[in-house]
Image (cartoon, rainbow, N blue to C red):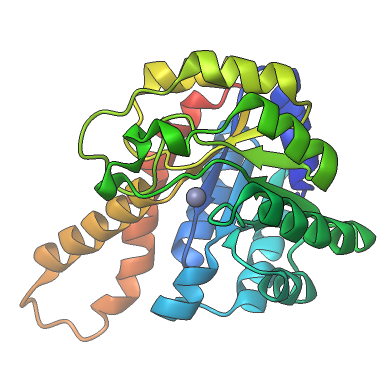
Length: 283
Ligand SMILES: [Zn+2]
């Protein structure tokens, strides 16, 4: 069933675990996430990254929302719908109009004062429409630039406390050694900092850049306040490998309609990956 992201995160907090939010680009990915969540009885979050719509023409925003809602309605397990990194008021509100009831405003590239001002304005309007808002403080950069190693990007506990108080955000993305994309070296999460931030704030904390963080570090982070964990790169990689495998398997066999076999072939591979990944999420 479709469930509010804030309710899923509250449940995760009560269970001292994290919900996993998977970036999806199309039906194969959303279907696989919803089906595996149901099979494993694990609440889950389906996420759209606006960049994929704008730069890769993967899908339209309202179509993605409707597709996810319809799939969510067909299962018993809670499924949340969330919009990942949006950088301004207009694009957040556009997604709200198109069916998203949980969004992220990422003004973390601005100075703290400006970040607070932009986020507070988004939260004020979003809450009128009953929409949940995730925000970011500190800066989760790119793994390829080794941003996870730059401790001046890390979130500071006192700033996080002030940010939550002044913006009213519903969840908070923090930087504690994580970064987006493929890590050059194994990341080391700053768990002591996470504990400080968790003690200073009372909203669910979010960890981005989840592809490649060792599972033992994740398990600790999930018991110390991380209640939402984003995975994108790894999931897209599994998808690509599945397509490649199918092409190799069927190359040159001359059958004209083999394209129709692609969805179920890749869904099976995606579901296998998801089943393993969802074991981290202990509701
Ligand atoms: Zn992110």
